[in-house]
Length: 370
Image (cartoon, rainbow, N blue to C red):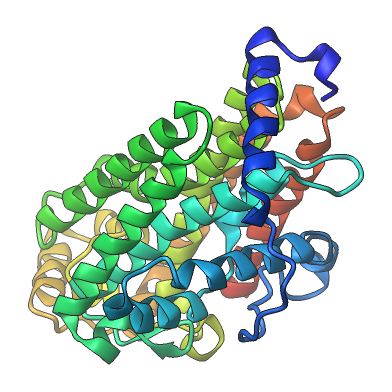
């Protein structure tokens, strides 16, 4: 939005931002760095336009990450470089960029730094999560824990969290650091809740949605919020975008949990079945248990808790009992709730882009389920 129509608070922030940009010219590096080709966040024809338009900004983020390697101590740099090269769809940075989108396709320099902050938090959670799940594959490469060992991976995750908060604290407003710190704490709360409940036969559908709202929805939400806030949009829109991000994150996690049962490991690029192997009860499994007799459910719970459940056999049972259809309905309800948050904001540039992301996620589930 134009500065003249911004709120007084937004005007103050825009003025502070200008001081920040002038004092930090390196946040949009122009030097070309050698790096692996990025994984397209929107492969296929459905996401072609979304990918094409955001690609220059993702490339700027990649260059920023290249420079960030040198900010870490020498003892950490090899691990950090490996982690940065082993990234996936970068959907959270894309959400942040589109949350702050301008009509001409531009974003602001600080969007790149804010996207790096969110992605660092996300990468830290993945490094830790892979250790907890004993996962060996992430984006078709060995996980950090597999390559460097679990102890080094845990400490690397801590270092990534620390660097994210350091970058957030460099902004001229405390709002960025506050929002990221709160989201990070909530992500950790979700991970802890899920970890403590592993193997608990009383883990419920309500528990499941509490976990995914925290561990996935929060980072999606803060990505959208920061994008819109840094562009000076009115607070009502910023909050609507944040709520959209939360609903999209919930839907995305549902998709990810379905993919664990009916996806192709070679195409998805990560170890499938780790949730099942580690005793996590995700939505497809919870709804299958609800559809079985008490005796059948007891046998299945025992198989899950003893590591004897077969992934493909479970997927077949889920299909027979209509679990995938029910999950798809709930997935759609979450997506529609997010889309409804943006219904009255169609005139603002970010809205169409964010709705496009919702359509992309919808298509991803359709492709996995065939």
